[in-house]
Length: 554
Image (cartoon, rainbow, N blue to C red; front, side, top):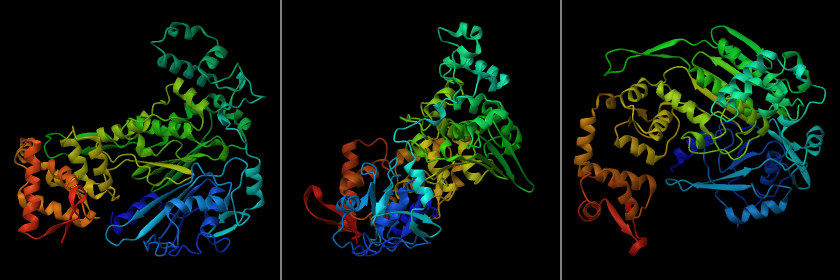
C-alpha cells in the first residue's frame, strides 16, 4: 500500500494514544530499543503490558501519525528484534508478543507495529529492572497500587460469573424474571426430549438445568440475569448496571439494575424509534423502515452483558445520539476481531464469561456459534441502513455504533435496487460511505462494477449505478472492457503496487474479459496486450528473466 493508504489504515486501527496505544518516531534504532530508561522501546512495551496490553507503532510522528519511517535499522530485523526484546523485557509473554511490518510502495518508508499482550497473572513486565506504566503522556515506574493489583491476580483462569455467592439464596431472585427465564428455556428446548417436563420442574431444578445456578447455589450469573434489584449489593464492588444516556437536543439518563433479563427491555423502551421513508428510483411506493431494529438493539445489549469484563467493576453504557446508538462494554474483543464474524462463518473458541454465556444461550438471549454480529449486519442491510461499526473500539473497551440514519442516499438506493449484492461488496460500500479506507484492489473491483467514483482516498458511492439495469450489466460482461481501458487498468495497478508478475496480471484481467472466452484465449489476449504495451506504446517493460520476471511501468 502507498503512504497515504497506510496512514489511513493506522488511523483507523489506532485512532488515539492511550494506555493501550503509543505512536513513536524512533527513526534510528541503534539506541532506541534499549537506551534511555523510561523513553526507549522496551520501556514502552513494559508500560503497555502492565496495563491491558496494546500496540506500539514506530516510524510515525507522535500526535499526528504522519509516517516518517524507520531510517536506520542498525542491525535489527523483524526476526531478531523480537528475541532481543524478550531477553530485555522480563516476563513479557513470548507466545503472544509479535511484530507487524509495513513498507510503503511509493515512498519506501517502513513502519513496525509491536503487538504487546497483557502481562501474565502475577507477573509484572520489567525493562531496565523496573516495571513501567503510562500516566498521561509520560512513562513512570509502576505505581504501588497497580503493582499490588497485578500481584493479587489469580494464576488460574477464573470465570467471575460462575462464582457462587455464599450468602445469596433463591429468595434473592426476582420471581417475574425466573418465570420469564423458564418461558424462554421452554422456547429454546421445544423440540427436546424433555420439553414436556420443563413446566413441572420446581425452580431449583429448572435453574440447575439451565446452568444458572450450580447445585442449587446462587451464582453471580443468577444475580446478574435474574436477581432482585436490591440484591445487587452481593456483586459489589461491581456496580451491576446498564446506563442509558440521551445526548441530543435535551439530555437524560437512567441506570438499570438486575435482573438484566428484564432490564434490557426497559432500556429498549427508552430509545426513541421513529419511522423513515426511503424513495428508491425504480420503486413506485416509498419504503418505510424504523430508525432502529429491535432485534439489533437487543443483540447489541445482550452481547455487552455476555462479554463485559466484570472484574473491571464498570457499567455497561448505551448512548443515544440523534443519529446513532453507541454500546460500550469494558474488555477487549475476546476472540479475534469483530470483522471475523461479519460473514457468519467463524465460531468463537473461547469466552471471557463461559458460565454467563451458556446461561444466556439457554435463555435464548445469545448464540455461541458466532452468528450474533452477522445477524446485526444482515438486519441493517435488509433495512438499507449503514452496517454496525466497531471502528472506535479500544484495546480495553468494545465500542459498537448502530446507525439510525442514512449516511449516503446512493448506498441505500443501491441496496434497495440490487437485493442480491454479495455481502462482501455491501461491507466495502459501507466503508466507502463512512469514509473509511479500503484497499486498492477493493477499490478497483468496486469501480469496475460502477459502484464507486472519485479518486483515492476520496471515493464515494456512485449515483449512476442506481439507473443501471441487469441487461446493461450482462452486455458489459459479455463484451468485456475495451482494450484502452484494460491498458489503463494495468498501468494504474503497476503504479500503485509496483512490479507485478504476469500470472497476477492475468488474475486481475480475467474477470474483465468477455465471459465466453476460454481460459487459453484469455491468456493469449493478456499476452498480446502486454506485448503491445511494451513494444508499441512503450508504457511498460519487463524486468528479470524466466518465471520470476515482472512487469513494471515506465
